[in-house]
Image 1 (cartoon, rainbow, N blue to C red):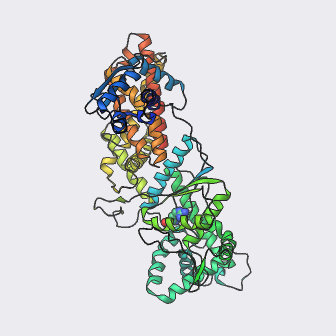
Image 2 (cartoon, helix red, strand yellow):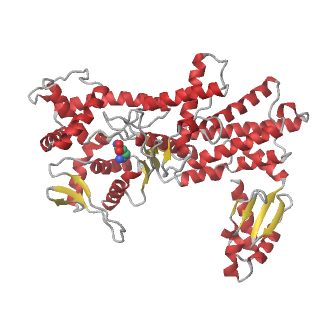
Image 3 (cartoon, rainbow, N blue to C red):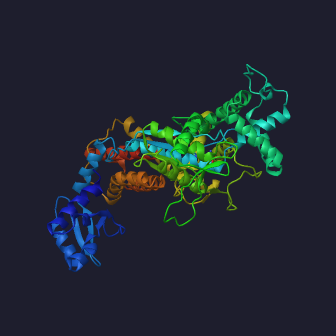
Length: 587
Ligand code: ARG
């Protein structure tokens, strides 16, 4: 149980003894840390129903909750707030129990079925943009948080590989290399094993053909037909499409590897292709979808909608499938996989799409009523000009370039801070890479996901302030304290009551973990953990300044401090891990 939950229970009992609702006993961390450690505001809420002055109720609650072993101070303030301070003995004992628990006091969550995290979502043959970067960082952190919290998690990259852009690329390759066997309808194979194009070729081709189909209706129609024929299984197109997929996949794998991000499944839109036709037949038979000028649509508007929710388009008049079609079939697939909660970590701009798809899934019965489908939206990463981040050349971001940029900046920062200076070049580069990624990830995850933020390389890579490198360096320093203690044969021991305020504050921060974890799960928001990790390093640094651990003469005290250092390191390492940030051995 968490400390806050324990305290809340004590106050719940006190309220109940007065014949009041026990849920009034909720205790929170004090917002006036100069006055108290915790507070309970239940008396104010109780006053009306009880027909008594809140201060009177508060006095009675204090009387009922009083326990000299637990509370060093319970006092009524202002209109009827209860201020709470713990005895040092109680706090020390609490920390000892946290130290003995591999989960730092956090409960194990269980869900109704598996949790699927759909994130990353790059498209075949198209360069990833910042939206994909954010999806990747936030989604990866969420898969880690949910997994650690105890859920059975599956992550799926859901690659965009079955839409119009596939047809566009097919016609562009045909235009340039008309003699390739893929375009010869009479050819019976086998098709060449070697890809006729590289990823660079495709990325160069894509904007060219996109512009052409934009302007020229005939070309647009050709691309549409090619897409349709691909979806209908034309052998040559499928073989060429497979090459597109493979070259993209290789690059994407390398990109995600560099970010330290793993997916359980590399599924995509095309994965569910075979499910689409039977799904549509069933829906048509049930009358859930209707014909509309040759297209098939599902009406998903609901009574009470405050804005218009247009129908979900499932087939075009030519029979081709759309983004929503494959997404709906993907829900069907996920139901089969035993998913109870699906989180779609995708750009906020796709909110309407998901609203339509989720409604369609429930309305049609594809998703059982208890299955939760949830869009986890996020804002944009902007450049200094306040517009979506672009490279200096004005192009979309290439992940490789971005990683190179943050690594380079980290390298210079390390030099500036005179860190890692006497290590070999290879280690320095490796540390720079880790620091650069920490800067990038923390810079993103420390914001609430729905807000937009400015990518500020200078600020993100600084070793001061609320940054990834600051936290990483904090963890490295803690490691080195433990290493030096080990070299002197000093071992952590039993945790005692805190000896001074800095130590007390650090202990209080450590006890907050279970709530912070729960909040980040509940709101699907890694920033709570990011913020908390920062509070922890700040509190640790104060503690370390106040307590001269290695020089301490009282062996019991020293061993207790070392255990606290160890717990802090374990927790901080976990927090960083949940944010996708590595801690170097030394710096
Ligand atoms: N490929 C899509 C894009 O680039 C993102 C996919 C998100 N996931 C999903 N199930 N639709 O916008």
